Structure formats: structure tokens, C-alpha cells
Amino acid sequence: MDTKEKNRDGTRRPRQDAPPRQAERTVPRREQPPRRRPPEEPAPRQRRTPPQDASVPRTAPQGTGPRKSAPQPTAQERAVARKKAEARQREAQKRAAENSRKKNALRNMLSDTPQTAEPRDRLAESQRRKARQAAAAEHRRRQARRHDTPSVIYTAPQAFNRHRLFVQLLTVTAVVVALVMGMSIFFKVKTVTVAGSQVYSAWTVREASGIQEGDNLLTFNRARANAQIRAKLPYVEKSRIGIKLPDTVILYIEEMDVAYAIQSDDSTWWLMNSGGRVVEQIDGRKAEEHTQILGITLDNPKAGEDAVAMEDAPIETDESGEYIPAMVTGAQRLHSAMQILKALEDNDIVGQAASVNVSFLDDIILWYGTRFQINLGDTGRMDYKIACMNDGIAAMSQYDSGILDVSFSFWQDQIGYTPFE
Image (tube, rainbow, N blue to C red):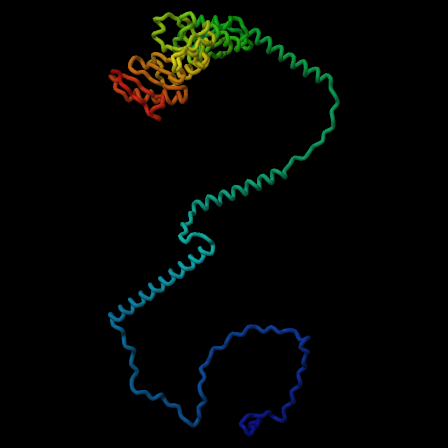
């Protein structure tokens, strides 16, 4: 028998003989602690079905016939669909590339960089990164070394020991005496050799140096020996002295290669180098074998000494035909002549130059053998003029002869050529 009764609306009501439910004890909201509920798994959704009346029987759905399958596309339709899909894919890729390009352009414009950025050089970036790491390591090492300073250790002062000082002084004195005795006894000059001498014999160079057998090998005066060699042997341009233990002295001699002929006040010929040093006196026949310097007269020349020019400047004439002295000194003409001689040596054409006439410094004349008369003009740009003269003669035929004007007064930076008739 059903103990529950239904209300008028069909709902059930509880039994009256059931004990009443006790009222639950409520806790104020502020004192009630929060409750943590474990997460519940969602229940599977169920399809709702409308309530059915029990009096209506359930029957199968009424159809119009047997169920048919969907029609299958043909091969041509599948190809068309595939082409459309590929076209849509390409269009999407184009849109993505265009969007990327626009984003890059906007980014470049905002960062003020060119839109066509070069590809990244990974090797250069790696090298820069390694350089930065090395610099940082070096900085850390220096910082560590700066702070890693040794500590100061204090030691107690020692008392003065006279006996130790006396022993030290005696030791130093003994060493010095031994060195002096060894140098004076063992290091003696026994052999003197000469290298590089062609004009003078080895015995002549040795006698000029003043070095004798038995001299101390380490204490003889080298400067005085070199000065005596250059003073007594005029052809010697440079000299050096070396030693070879235990008893050998070596004299290295450099003799001058070229000398030029110049006249003195008594009409004699002397040889002089490009540095103005008088070498020796020669006769007129031997003077023809050397380049002659004309327009200068030496005042009482001596072998081994520097040349001194006399002040006998040539006489010039003015427009009326009156003679006037030239306003050029002999020292100036000698200095200009030495500049020309050094330029000839630098261009290696000393042997071909027959004479250099510096009587007038605004019209210097040089004879190249007997073929060419060279007009050098004034003393300006002499090295350049000699080089141009050398190039011009090299371009001539071996049968040409005439006057070459390299003064650059009539033709600027050009050589004038006038053949002999």
C-alpha cells in the first residue's frame, strides 16, 4: 500500500507520520570558511525526448521508400575541385606574402632602416659575439688582478754587519782586478785585416789607422783611428772598425766611386767628389777622363780637405756693352755644381757627362759626351731636369745630336730639341 498521497496537481506529499526534519544550524557568512569542491566531471549530454503519452503506441517513422546513398563525383569534377583548391591556396599564400611585405615595410619605416635589408651575416655576428665575450673576459680578468694585490709583509730591521760589507767590497775589488788583468794580458792586438780597399793596399790602410800590434783590443780609440784613415787616405769615403776575439781587428773601407776634375788658381787640375772633398792632383790628360767642372776655381786646394772656391766671378756685360761684375759668389757656384753632380749620380749617367759649366747660374750648360748640349737653365728643380734629360736622351736615336733644352722656360714641362746642322 502506498504510504504517500498525491496532491490535486499530481505531486506527492510527504507522509504525515514521518518525523519532522530538524532545522540546520546556520553560520554567519563572515565566519563560514570557503568550501573547496573537487572538480566534477561533466556528465555526458543526453538527448532530450519529448514526453510521450502512454496511450499512444510507438511506431517506426514512415518513409517514402528505401534510403539512397549520395551521388559520387566524376573524375573531371574532382580535377576541377582540386584546381579550385590549389588556386585558393595560392591566393592565400599571395595574401600572406603581401601582408608580410607590408608589415616589414612598416617596421623598416618605423625603425628608419632601408626597406631592402641585407641578409644577416651569421659568420660576422658570430665573430662579433666572440669578440664581445673575449673583451668581457679580459675586463673581468683585469678587475680580478686589480683587486688581487699582494699584502705587505713587515720584517724586522737587521743590524749592520761590518764583516759582511767588508767581504762584499773585497769580492767586487777582486773581480775588477781580474777583469783588468785579463784585458791587459790576454786581449792584445795581433792581427789587423782590411776589407773593401781597392785604391790603397792593406798595409797603407793599416799604417794610416795607427793601430799597432800589442794594443789593447777593447780599449784602443776607434774614433781617432777612423779620423786618421779618412784624413790620410782621400779616396776613403767611409770606414768602420770591428773586433774579433781574442786578438783580431777588422778595418772596413768604402772608397769613392766617382771623382770630378776641377782647376785650381794655378791652372792645375784636381779631383773632387760630389761632397766637395779634394782627392788628389792630376795632369791635364787624366783630367779629360773625368767630368770637368767649369766656371769654378779652387783656392789653394789640398788632398783630403774640403774644396774652397775663389771669388773670381766672371764678368758680364749690360745692354750698353759695359762690363759689370756678376752678383754670384764662388761658393754659390760650387754648391750648385755639387747639386748637379749628385743628381747625375742618382740617375747613373756620370760617365756620359763630359762637362758642367756653372759660370752663370741662370744658364747652366751640360755636355753629354759630344752628341748633346743640355741647357739646364737655372738651379731650380735640378733633380727633375736631370731625370727628364736622361729620359729624353734614351728616346733619341744613337745617330741624333743637337741641343736639348730642359730649362722649362720656353716649353713648360717639355724638352726642346734642336739638331746640329
